[in-house]
Length: 91
Length: 176
Length: 177
Image 1 (tube, helix red, strand yellow):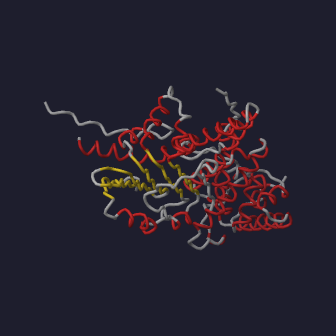
Image 2: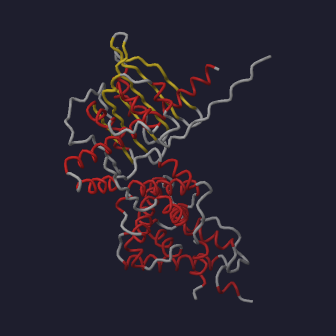
Image 3: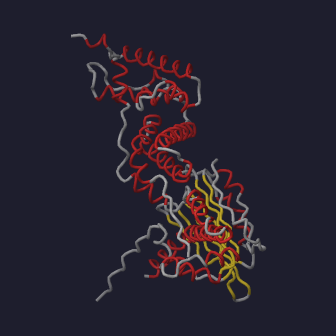
């Protein structure tokens, strides 16, 4: 067994991610668009059996709703910060 | 009213928990900077989240994460390399005399020495000794020929042995 | 650069989008590592409203919020490192918002995190017909145009919903006795 390779394995052993790492990722994920395309495509396939026109409309509707929520999410965050700053100044 | 079935696919939270150590460690050992490694690792998982519907299997997820981490760590390393890379000869090392196998000082010295390698051999070494990948797997992750991977491994090991030997670290220094 | 583009729904009839200023952010986009682009015109908003669940408190709030809106246009950019984008990159936007029909009502900067938020109202006489928001921090730029009549207070209250963490307000000072 090569001593250097053993030492390298020891030196480069995986380390735990910092405390709170997963929480930070989840929080950042919440303001980013999710990769929901497959979800929506799967939903669309389910409803096709019940009627193509209605199915497509449903798919479009959920897609539109998702985009509205995303747009408002991105718009609401800075407004909320401003609201709190204005309140704290006026107190 | 039609009920739409929800296919949840892969659980992002579970993938995050399962692979965060791997992703963070590749970035850390390559960049040798905890804060930057954490940032890179976060970006990798956010990228995974956006591409979750492209993940085909658990093994695919592992390979995908590894490859993206490698790319992002290398990109970050290039972006930060505004100062000239420290030559291996100039690395200020901790006192090496008397260092024995398994000594944490030796591990720290090795990590510092690895951090001074050029980016390609550095990443090859990280993938080999952190992830225990075979040369063919490293070649696939780095998109380089297997022969190049093996060459990087051989040269890096030889260089490290030489540098350690000069500092009295190595089999010849452990007699008695 | 990785780009994630969410285009407005192509299958719906495309009405003339009442965007109130040009979202010419090519300089920003070129430097961004990720990019979100949302353009929702009146038809899409009305259509989406039908799929908002009135029994869900959040969706009910959203439904009410978008009632008077004619369009929402959002450009959101993330950057790998601070210092990637500059104020000059946003000048094409700010130059338009210096026009006589725009009135700046908020200019806020947070020294701690380097974030800033600017809000303008688009006026036609005494009536507000739109809002522009430019929000930045060292690694993010968000530019929003909301055309139509929107309750800014209600929009702000959405903070804390949709996964956006609520910022705790400063403690109220004790009243002197």
